Image 1 (tube, rainbow, N blue to C red):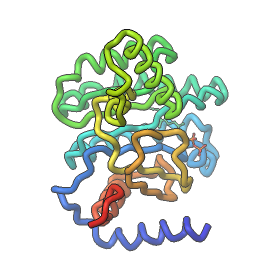
Image 2 (image 1 turned 90 degrees about the vertical axis):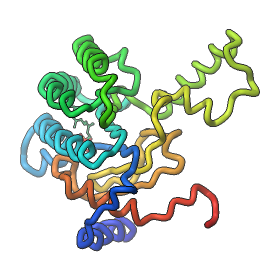
Image 3 (image 1 turned 45 degrees about the vertical axis):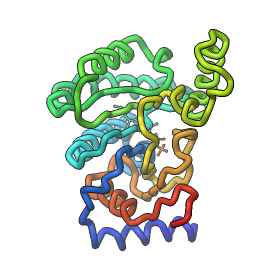
Length: 255
Ligand code: FPP
């Protein structure tokens, strides 16, 4: 509890100095969008309305990231474990995804955003897959922010899928055992063409990764906030980036 408090105290200190160094904007930001249920409960609302308010936060943060020149934004929208939630909640999340893609497509495309997904999307309802594929096909040549929606995503599952991919390519002679390196393994992840996240943000007071980007987060900077995701605004994003810019990333080396 003491440690948690220390993180939040630091948030306040940083908020007094929010000038961002535009030459040190993280290339890849990843967010665990947590706290929608608690946000709704605090207001005596159904959980679905918490997720709906979470979509508003997505809108704000995607715009801000694009404005700041962030290259990649990965949002943990539905985990492999989230199927264990009540069917009604799973349905409402799938509907929100389809609505988001339909309502936001024009604006995202006009702002040069690439709409991508990571995870095993073959298990999502057909309508979600169709909207995701359409959005990707129409935006894949855009040059702005890449919005990566992590859907039916699990970090351990991703590693298993990467190992299977390597096994297939080994068997067919496409690669040899000696060619398998950390870099090659990275290429077999769902994020194969994307750099590792520089900064991972988790709101809602929880201090864990919850099976998110396990392979890719080896040297990511972590930033936590006690605010629930629906209350996450541009200011919190800037706080996180400002804190990130003050950190000394050594990647195991010495200066
Ligand atoms: C975690 O909060 C949030 C989720 C599991 C879903 C996040 C999804 C959205 C914000 C909207 C749908 C996605 C898109 C891309 C439009 P929680 O429900 O676990 O919160 P709690 O821990 O307070 O209960």
